[in-house]
Image 1: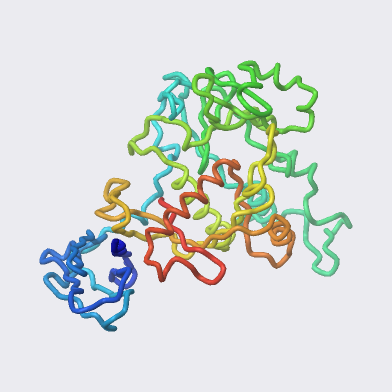
Image 2: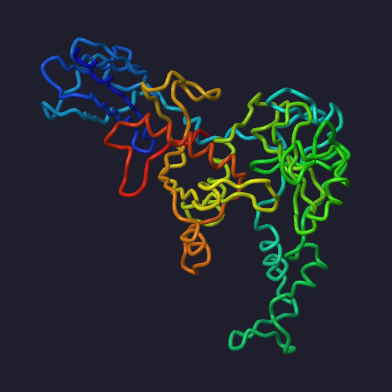
Length: 423
């Protein structure tokens, strides 16, 4: 019995900077006289005819070549590609707008917070009176710099001696930890949770413990936890633990963590629901994409290492991602819009047109020892990004699936795989 021919894969990616669309097709077999690629008359679709079969792909934006039969440059090739110019209409680049993750201005005051899995309410309606965005991770360092170099303040008394790095009075020119702590932004400083206030960062929402209910605290799994944090925290094994796992008491989904340092219940955005002006519910991919974009803006480095949050205990730790291996990602383009015949999804956010907003990146798994060397190196350019171990594994699975949306010739670059992360 003859085997079924491979299904062709069509992939289109918007290149807004040069106002073109990159179109690539993997035929699965050699092109011949039956192979024909036509741009629809309205410029919004392309149609492939190959070996008696027809396949259509909706483009991420309208192109100017409506009704054109695209030339096949290399007859007999199984991989085809073209650059199509955009139409005259101005393209609105929705993917360059704010990423689809909640901010303080997006969340509605008084809205309840619920488990996304079972809809059990964990923060009641009208409890949160105000939402506040948390500062970036390096806020303490920037505050120290500002304090020492205030605009217009040239009379501060620690004049730096470049020859020996000491102040005029012979003391160290750099503020010590105690003086920074007194100003409120030393190395040990943290913004503590406040009643009726919801703090927002790129991946989490944080609340004071008294504002939350229907949650279970645990050093490991929900079966070994308690709704009373004091009971769990009194466990002798918790002495060296800085956080507790937080689970939904109804369905036992992990919602986030309790941080002893900030006295805050920190809930992961992709695990909860909350009313927002945009009506968006950020998922894991969107939250991680926002974090990677912020990391690039802060450090200038497009490479990151995804490391698990290690401040909590687990009963068992499996081999693989998070323990022996680390996910290493390298962002190539943080702002693309694509369509692929391998997926039926076309729109993920309002105003995104017919394409999917994403970032294109390279990814691979490296030994934990190599990752540690990269982080310890003074010349290393990889930044550390911390998310739960389960989330890292899910991200890698999604990147592997996205790799299959790309043409076969564009799925691998040296030792890296190419993936798409929705944003």
